[in-house]
Image 1: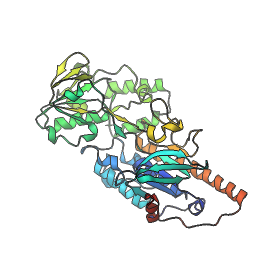
Image 2: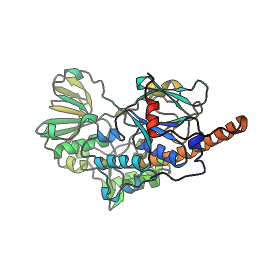
Image 3: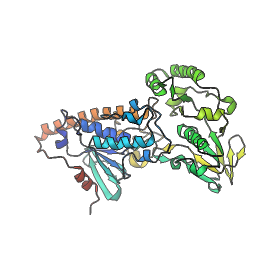
Length: 423
């Protein structure tokens, strides 16, 4: 169904160029829908052949760690039938329904590789595969927090005769049945894969830990951890650290005897450093039962042996590296001076960098209140600020040049033709 008409609907036919949204995941779709609801024409450019591509590649058992009620995007709630903790396949179905419901313009199979300021200084030029050049009034970059798999360059890695796989390539435990498996990294992905391997028939599962994580119950007495995250996110860091420490002592058993002591650094201090707590989906029980064995961090490989930080050596049949991702924004916008030393956007959400007005980023943080919830909030804020800016530009253009002749917006089919390379 069409989105609601607003007082800025005339922008659909008067603005000379659309807003391009790079990325067809939840952040990009939410931004496009919020812009459309305010009368701003937005075209989503997705490098894969479908929306929600990264979600389709996640491991089979994945469920959202945030509740259905607090994970919906603007203008369409997640269906109640998907349950409280939405499964991966249902998350993909929801994103498909979302794009259809809002009648979003989505161009698939096109990758934007570089963004440059337009030659006339008004807007941006997007350089894409196939020699395409797309003219944009503004750009929303929503290529995702987990973009490019990061596999450490461990010494001797190439000599390891077993199977070495990044977590992005893990689907389920079937290929590892009866094997000795080492999972490297104890974030949410590593913890859940370790549990999946145990339940899927792996003979032995060890979990390499460099930094001991904070572990939270996903829900306690029906109260989801996400709601607590929402309530405390504006409180002082030290206060939240103290509250979290008290709650952990009540709700999470001490696993020190099993190789997972309580962290010395506070929970919210870690969050501010970019480390989200591990939501328990079976790890606590598996560690207590000895079915998942925490070991020291990986230092390197020596033939079939994995060398650990404490000097010990183990010989697993397979290694699954849950070692995170790169944002991979350098080639796209690194030359514009909008990234920090870690490659993260200097401005996020509704704020655009002073040196790059009209360029927005969404989905490049790890909020304690839930990624999807914050993507939805960012989308509304970006749409509100951007529609206001475009309205001012249009009013100024009309005042200085006189009224422009209106033209009908191009259809999705026309958008696809425009995105094709010139012959």
